[in-house]
Image (cartoon, rainbow over all chains, first blue to last red; front, side, top):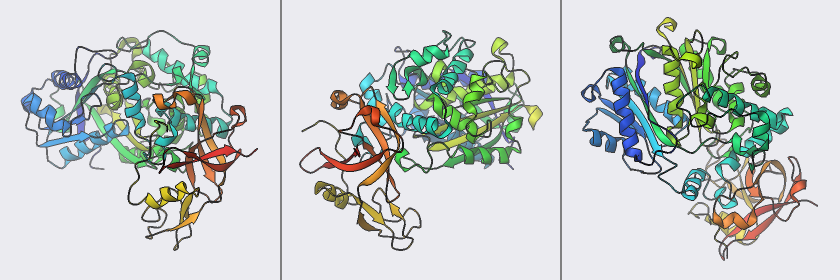
Length: 389
Length: 134
């Protein structure tokens, strides 16, 4: 396929995350752009494409254009992702297509929000649960954890699984976060700690749920022939695929299998790779059961077997296939829509190498997967080092 | 009346909500492919044929999955905590969301049979709800 290896990520940057009240969502986004450009050894004048996502704390009808104006940029390619999760990787893939089509050469993808400091707790909850159908779901008072708990309960029932299987995902993510100095949650936890945390929406407990944060991150994507001059080893886009099932969970054909199956198959096909080629994976972990379903749909585990994979420690640091090596949305950070950007920047750093005790040995292929809605819209990306071309 | 959210009724869903207001739950049946769907649409989502016909639901179903909400989405639901949100597989085939009301929490389970009831939320809006079959 033409897209395989034709673009590369040459710059990455994460802002400080957690509680960052001294910076607006817009300022976090701008900081992410400038940081990623510095990492790529480029200046603003080198940028001819800009992609952002909308902010919940500071929404703007033309968000990317607003950020471009703030920066003094007049990009040839400018787009705003309306949502987070899988949409983050969809816009990455579309930016690569724009480069491949000759519309632009260098695109900065930057996403940030102030979910923690820029919104009240109730406003954040109501805004997030607005993904429910206004006529046929919202009147029943479900929260976002509640929507995902419907999936969790179905998973327990379908596979005779136990809450320990969900808890093992949280424990594994925390083990990775303990090795990441930037992570918000760095105190080790046990399965018992997860099972003793309070119920939010049965069977999901507090430690099955991801964080609510401020923060942002950016990447610089450019044509492969321009990437050779970058200060760091380029990380190539090898494949990408999208998959969609329902939008609203009450319309889902299956509660335990998702369109990650489709997005994964399409990404593997473009890259000419299979699940066995993956050295590390970042699998969207807004809630612990989601990781189990995605692992199975992406072919990284057998159906109904992902819980045991995590109980054995196979996804932990030094495990058979390290999962969410930065700590994920559960333990690193989750500023809402920009959340999966941190999976992307982490994957680039892992493939560059030199991450010390967090480094995955012999990492050449990284799979990055995210979904949006309620297990609705999926996008899978495969990234690789020069050796994989 | 309650501060709970009211559905923003639109031109295509007006007949559905008017039926709810008289204690009937309407599904749609496609004349071309015979599939039954929920929620109301201008076409059949299975085959694309236009104008599926309204049909009355029997009101029977089973719990396909459920959760017990321990932390309410907004203050309007605080007094209900803990409350059940479920997906109901209707006897006619489609799935819809509902609360499980007037039922013992410990008896709520996947596969449990449920029966349609309604919750009056405003003069114009009667929300379809389900309770366990005793």
